[in-house]
Image (cartoon, rainbow, N blue to C red):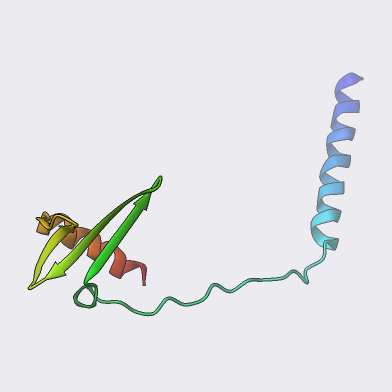
Length: 90
């Protein structure tokens, strides 16, 4: 007897959810994200990374990447990977 009561309650829940899904309002507001302009790796000459108040700037001079402000040479392979990821976002 208890099992039959649980099946009836489950059936009522399924019916109520079905009615809700069929009758809910479909005139929702849809947002469209703005398109980012296409950027190639060659167009990027400066990267700035800000984290918790600290900033790191990487600049390109004469086809070599430097970490500012002391102008330490940056790892070219890692910069290339970063630029590839940024270019893939656009």
